[in-house]
Image (tube, rainbow, N blue to C red):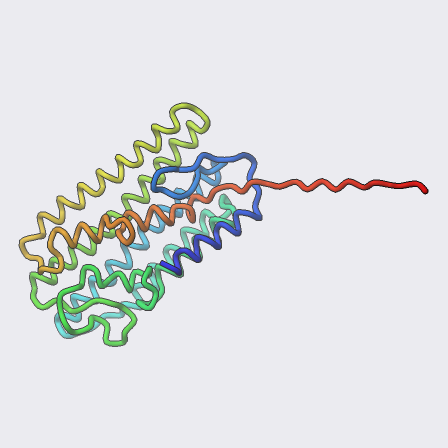
Length: 273
């Protein structure tokens, strides 16, 4: 959490040095961030938001392959898999960089580093791998870079993989909800319809959570106790550590808010003796 707050603080400081053409509407509610101030910035933020969703899904896939191999007593190049995912994310950002402001580019690079850090960073994907891979005693990664235990049974392995993928899908869907809200807010900025745009975003998130719950219910019969319905819902919707809460908090990195400018006027008084 401290690392994530540090990234958000960096974005806030960077925003204070970059003046935008006009103020933008905050997302409001439990979502940080503001509607972009131009079509280029909107396009940039939406592409980067989608790219983060793909990065999370790709790294999750790397972890699933790693766990499957560990269960069989073999191994895979999980680090190489993550490097490939990072390369695709970096390529997408490079393609859209010309439309981006420095705040988004710096914040996205910082958050990417958090996501791809080792398990020593609790906000990293490696650390959060312990959520779905909770049933077992032997470490999935004997080198200690990735958290999580080797499931005890084939059913447990199947359950953990499905939960991990469902959580990644939930993150990607919430990121898309934010993108739709930003687009609607940009078109309706300053009108009475702006509030409705963000109300629809909350409905979008709740629909995403409902789909997650359907998936959780389907896999539940083969899940160990640490992945019962209550635990799966906690991984998805805990107000502090759940996937939705985490994506809402980092929205300001993808959709930064404008800074207010302060003009200082200096007056000089001349006294004649």
